[in-house]
Amino acid sequence: MKQERTYPQLIVTKKQEKVLKAGHPWVYEDEITSPIDEIENGSLVDVCSQKNIYLGTGIYSVTSKIRVRILDVNANETFQMPFFARRVAYALQYRRDVMGEDWNACRLIHGESDGLPGVTIDRYESILVSEILSYGMEQRKQWIYQSLIDQLSGYGVKIDGIYERCEGELRTREGLDQHRGWVDLPGLANPESPVVIIHENGIAYEVDVENGQKTGFFLDQKYNRVAVRKISEGRRVLDCCTHTGSFAMNAAIGKAEHVTAVDISETALASARRNAAMNNLDQQIEFVQADVFDILEQSLKEHQRYDFIVLDPPAFTKSRKTREHAYNGYLKINTLAMRLLPRGGYLATCSCSHFMPSGLFKSMLKEAAEAAGVRLRMVEERHAAMDHPVLISVPETDYLKFFLVQIL
Image 1: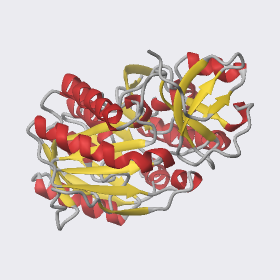
Image 2: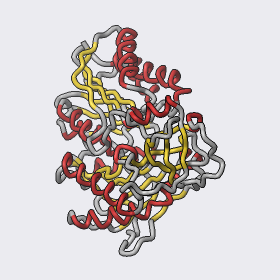
Image 3: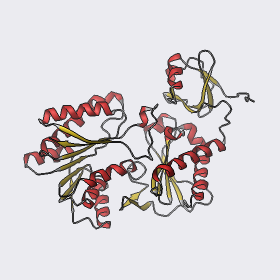
């Protein structure tokens, strides 16, 4: 029997109805046609069409332009702890399906892609690192945390602590505070040190979950790093924006003739040096502090020889307003890299912003090749690792682009 609905009801435009039926879970403020003054922040609401047809239930945000994030389209769902426990179970089972035993360092919850909007949770051995960007999910996070601890235990995984990295502009937009620190939950020891050692593709990394970028490490490039390793043998490799040295070390493991790892941050380079030493690769990698544009221009002037260049810069754009500026930035560094590489050389180039879609990034590469006076042969196009799943109906989940090309 269909239960009586007690949630506030929102009516949306025909345009929004079409979007929801196509599977996108966001309802924007200007697509709501009914009054919304009395709805509490973080509360559950039913979204309906102009003809009062139920379209789904989601979490309401008072301050965000995304006013509702749909949780489910089942009108009989109660959205209590069992619902969130099921979502966690589906997420963990998916990781076991696609990652197998290779999940000691792995994204366990990937927001909308796992039906838990605004929630990111990564695993680093026995530590979970959480980022909550939705007001409603902040209110319900304890259910998610407890479900993860209990269900991971069933897989033989003991969690010692959950560290929250709840920071950034998106939290401010949701009316949330910004904080970081260990979560106080029964049964968690909460390690004294926020630094943990993980192993990825046979390489050990030091991960600082308190001070590292994002949740401590960029897990999404996991298999893209192996793609670089496979064709590094005998080549002189320049790894731009090396951060913690991951691409550089994979190139070294792949028997590169020489590896130069560049980053503008001395803090990042210090971490990269420690990682290289820990893996006995410090004698094979030269670390240089420099801006990516400066190092490429300097190398051109000095006629430096590289056979393989990796470009993995931070996101040049985090909004549509700055996409043109970002395009020009990507165009410049890729043109410089292509001019620096010889015929037969390889370029691995990335963008980690969903505001720079694959089609536009390809157009940039074509324009860069024309400017550099070269032709490109596509070796492969890759995306984030499978533990960062993409929802076909939600383009925003397809954020990482990785292109491996050869200069002709």
